[in-house]
Picture 1: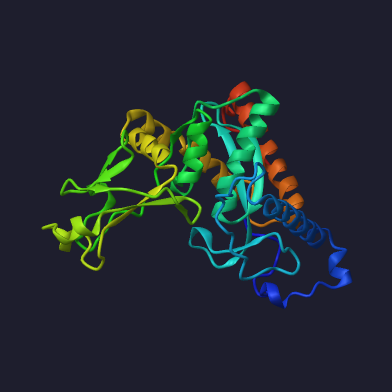
Picture 2: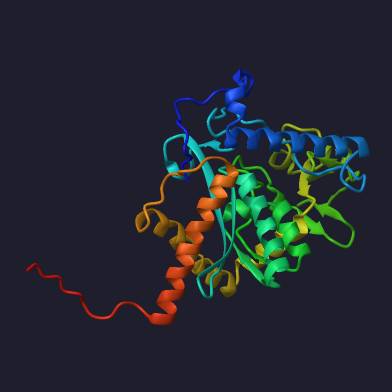
Length: 323
């Protein structure tokens, strides 16, 4: 959703020098308070040497935004849906597709990472408030990351989500799918039946590398199809690959296809907001302003759904006459 901020007035973070007048504005004060709170949390993690329990964190480093709006700094510089580049917010709905009812709403900056993370907050909040916990969750490919799929499977929620996978190669060499995973031994088996082991070191917060022996690769006949530019083959494996495999198995089922069709009810909610309700640009600023507007929009849509289900669609045609 387009933010109430001019796309022509964006500035790089190091160019911003907030004045006293700007700091008194709600959207700016809210943004700066969020930065301060985030810095305190990060400082606490650094003091403990990792996460809240002292273990190393696996959250990937977030890159700072390249452009910030001085009037609405919480919004994100984005070019989603093949639109022009603009500042915007992500409208995230948690919808009961069986009854087409919106059960929770969460505003975020229009960034994929934030939108995916918001689903966790909505699921937790819905379970806490209403005692509702879904048995399955349908979403698009943006939600098919190993981290999110692992979180869902760990909560006992079936992920009917296409898996984001960039492991297939197009240069004629073996892809990761050509290597067989031996779950019992915790190793990969190459097409020439050689074993790839790992030290267990986690790279980039979410990846473990399995390496073949240089001795095996030097004498391997299909080496030029496997690792022509490397001494030995390496195969990366997501730490949540088991959850990704679970999602892959579900992708070939009729239930997955049914969930994919039911997602049309979700997309219709966003389309109706723009076409039927004229909601294409925010009127308020800041995350709290986006939260107010998005909740009002969800309430209006739920009331409309309830009216149609309880009263039914209008019958007959209303004729207007001019006296």
